View 1: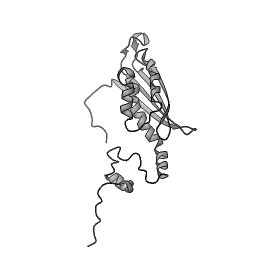
View 2: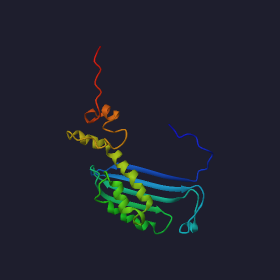
View 3: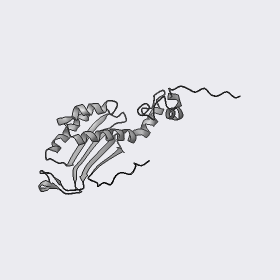
View 4: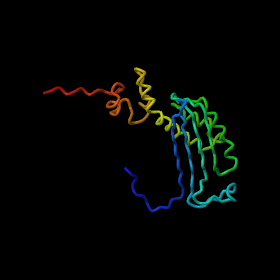
Length: 191
């Protein structure tokens, strides 16, 4: 269902986040995120374009790639800060190599905030890690499920990770009945 109609308004800013997942020939996965911020009016920024960023030109144009395995371990990181508001912004991009060795799993967001929060990182690259992490799960989903089928008794990783996939709920009862943990409703006896 779409959003309800709004009051009359004028577009001021567009943030675009695009994330893509790629399976590599070596068995690893590249998960890439790209973020742009674009204003509809010229923006004064002393360190760019003679002090003015024209309408429609990105204020931010940033990219981040995590190379992961199927266990969600991070093997490599590449980042790019092509357009930023300040000349020194790109200096922080190599700090994201600290992600190497981490695993995208429960607690990943907390870990990344500790590593890159405040003056230790770029707010925008840090924000990009959330959609990159979910893209990693979406990209590898088919192979994750196939691998789970090879491991008897292993619960699918996505269960109990959102409202719909609650192991006590109807979706799990219908699609993954052996993992359903809710109360079974007794079948009605014939009259």
